[in-house]
Amino acid sequence: MYVVFGATGQTGSAVADALLEKNQLVRVVLRSDKTAAAWRAKGADVAFANLSDLVAMTRAMGNADAVYAINPPAYNVADMFAVARGIGERYVAAIKSSGAQKVVLLSSVGSQHASGTGNILTTHILESIFGDLKIPVAFLRASAFLENWSSMAQIAADQGILPSFYRPLERKIPMVCAADIGRAVAQAMTADWTGKRIIELHGAADYSPNDVAAAFATALGRDVQAVAVPESDWQATISSFGFSPEAVNCYSEMMRGFNSGHIEFEGGSHVQTVRGQTLLSDVVSKLIEAQA
Image 1 (spheres, helix red, strand yellow):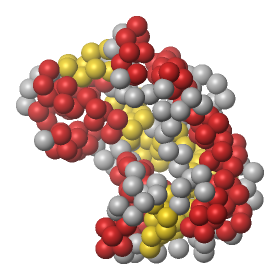
Image 2 (cartoon, rainbow, N blue to C red; image 1 turned 90 degrees about the vertical axis):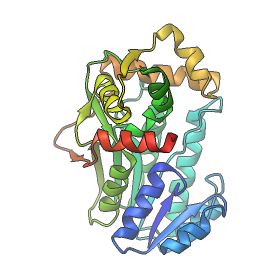
Image 3 (cartoon, rainbow, N blue to C red; image 1 turned 180 degrees about the horizontal axis):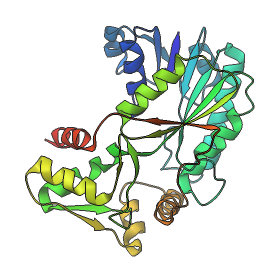
Image 4 (cartoon, rainbow, N blue to C red; image 1 turned 180 degrees about the vertical axis):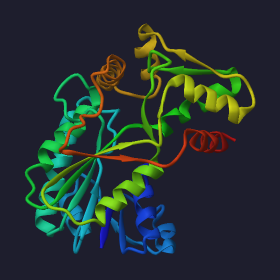
């Protein structure tokens, strides 16, 4: 049985779908029954647990050959790091009590660093906590999510511009889509390994904001230009997303880390590098369809 937390989110649903496509027994862990019927129709078992409920988490992991663990974003709280630490500790306690055989944790590019990464520090914290487990553990460090450009799709369509926190606009960085994360996690969950693994997941190619703007232009049939958001505007812009003041500061630090080159993949002989297969153009087309 493969247990997937966060099945209502982008990566959790992609992981569960990828496992089901492999004809594996899957248990999705949900917080409510809103999507339970749809998952059961796909052939998945359903369990309910909130990441604040250790007992429910432990029950959901029963008979697990592997567990997919995530740390949901907590952009509306004052201390996302304390939240991440609590979630990590409950995950580990539940894994130990349930007897789960192995675990894949969704982590992030830059998680090798203990400072200067903003909210990516949450995955560094979780990696540290999960590192104490005696069972096989894989840290899947994903690159920047291509789906994060979805908030700019309507602006690109209406105004012909693509606001970007990344700069310089011509610099390419690793970006990957949720479907490729799902496939990579499913592959790791169904594989055999011992000890700790670090998997660095790149997309099919690296892309710059200019590349993303060009993809939107092609899909929309109009000119679209990438425009760098001045750092003086970051606080107001990020606050408009509903982030707490502390989360605004964390997000800003993360973007400075990307732009300075501090946030990058670790590399090295101890790291496995995996590339996704989905092209930027395919993701952008889906983002535009979703806005229609």
